[in-house]
Image (spheres, helix red, strand yellow):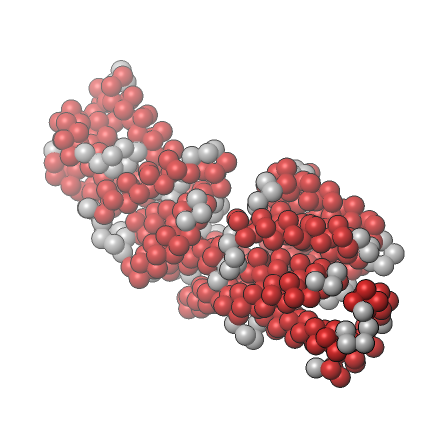
Length: 487
C-alpha cells in the first residue's frame, strides 16, 4: 500500500498552503528528479492528487496522464482511493500531536488569505464530495474548518447552517467534537448564549460518554480534550452568572494546564486570568492583584506585550487596583489598556469596546461623569455598527449609557435604552439569567425614579430637583426607601 494516502489523512487537517507545497514538490520531483524510479513514484502520487483534488482542482484527464507516466495501472490508483474512502484511522492524530490543535483561521487572517482559504476549502469539499460519503471524518473536519473561516469573515449565519448540516452527518466522537466546538464559537459570535450553553453541555456529555479514549493514539490527548471542555464550561458558567461553579471549574483547569504545559504557557496564564476575574466579581481584589501581578510579567515575556491575552490581563488589573484608595491608578491602567487594544485590535473590535466600558467605569468612580458619558455614547455607536443592535454586548453598552443618562437627568432617554437592553438580554439569555435579571431590576428602578420625579416636579423646579438628587446619591439607602415608597 502506498504511504501517500496515509499522509493525505494527516495533512488534510493542516494549513491548505501545505497541501499546495506538497503538490508542487511532487510535480517538481516527477519532472526533474534524476532517478527514474523516484519520478515514477511522484507521478503516481500526482495522479492520486488530481483524482481526489489534493493541492489542486480535481481533474480526471490529468490524473490519467500522470498515471500513464508512472507506469502503474488503474487498479493501483483505485486501491489508494478506496483506502481513503474506507475512513480507517484516525491517521490525522499524528499531526495533532505535533501541532496541538491549531486555529487555522487565525493563521489565515494574520496572512490575509481568508478569502482564498474559503475558496480552497469550498472546492476541496466539492471535489471530495464526489468520492467520499458525507459521514467521512475528513469531509466533516473540512466543513468545520470552512465554518470557522466564515466566522472570521463575519458570515456566522452561513457558518451555523453549514455546521448544523455537518453535525447531522457526524457519526463518531473524533469528528463530532470539532464540529460542536466550531458551532459553539459561531453561537458566541451571534450572541446566542443559550445555544452556547446547550452546545458546551452536549460536548461535555459526549466526552463523558466514553472519555474519548478509544479514538486517541497518543499520550496526554485526553487531558488536552479535558482542558478544552473545562475552558468552555467555565465560559458558560460566566455567562450564566454561576460564578462559584466557574471558580471551581477554572481551578480544575489550572491544575490540568500546569500538568500539560507548565506555568509559563498561554493556556495556564489564560486560566489564571479567569480566576482573577472571578476574584474581582466577589470583591476579592487583593487575591486578584496577586494573581495578575504574578502572571503579567510571565505572559509579557513569552507572549509579548501586545498579545490579546496579555491585554486581557491588563484590563482585569484595571478593576483589581480600582479601590477607593487607588481609583486614579485604575483609570491610568484602563486608559493604557484601551490605547493598546485600539492599536493592536482596532477600534471596532468587540474587546476594544469592552475596554472602553472599563475606562468609563473607572472615570465614573472618580466623579468624571461627563467623560464617562461621552465614552459610553461612542461605544454604543460603534457596537451598533460592528456587531448589531441585538447583540448582548450592545445591550451592555445600552445599560451603561442609560446609567449615565440618568445621572444627567435624561430619564426618558435612559429608560428607552434600558428597555431595549432588557429585550436583547431576554432573547439571548432567557428571563432567569443573572444579566437579564440585573437589567430588568435596573429598568424597574429607573421607572420608579421617573415616577418619583413626576411627583416631586409638582412642587420643586427641575434645576433644584437635580441638585438635591446629586446630593442624595451618596445616601443610597435613603434613596431606595423613597423610591420603594413611590413604586
